[in-house]
Length: 350
Image 1: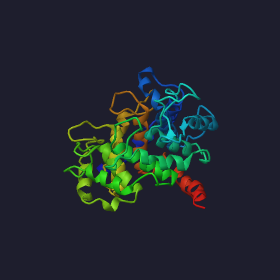
Image 2: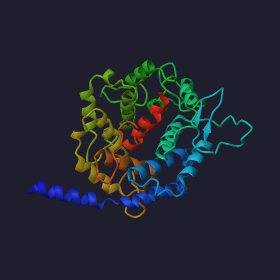
Image 3: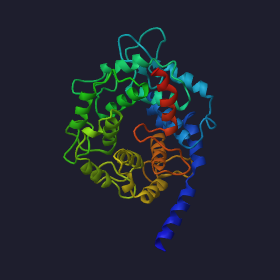
Image 4: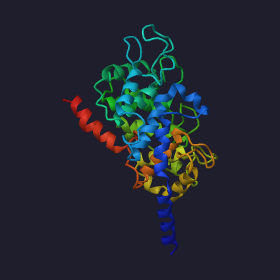
């Protein structure tokens, strides 16, 4: 009897997610954001990606777009920056572009924006004919350090597992690994492993759910997961992150984004069936905004694009019937990745 009641409660909870409201939220994020998000101005490409990917998981592309797909595709291409002397890729926005003819020393690409721009173009149905594929892929070599880590930009000193992951996604999408030394990259990832067998952002740092995902996803994209020993110890650490939802580190509160970072890590290790799905779903339901749509990091907080998308991504990972299936390493729908492989990669491989 208890089992039946739990199943009924879970089914009712499934039906109570405000999916139509979330479609409106992501559509709105493509047009205007609240003033308190002004710090995201130089990361508009990332915000656009979360919104487009969210609409895609919700089966709402292109019908819920506030603009024509061609307009959005054109906007992304305006942010592509190709040079002969620096790293090629995509800017995060036009905020640092002061002139189309006079070079600006602060106008550079960012590896995360390059990744999210390429994923967004894929979601919009672009054929990548205008992507400067080989120049972008080969120029990644200028961001890789001798220890195998990657810089965010050629102006930055910031380097950690986040940008290793971004570099691997870019190379995977472009089907060109010429700009990445996989051996150095793998060695850096393994150097970031802690005594708990999870991963910090850099060697010697505390293990963290986000950087652990970046490590495992990057190894997966490079076909190097077999280089990782002590996988059961890592799985144990990941499972210990679940209270109701998931936290990113011991003694931290649950946060909706870790339902993805930890959940996808376990999926890549083929152990996601060990997650308490109903408990995780209950937590995500508590972070859902019933008024504006979207999800926040904690209950009774303000929704934002990143936590909104990663919450949906986690529900997709749990095979929610109202959402498209998702790729656990690339954070977009399996539909989009299949099109990448069959329509784009196959053409490039001829």
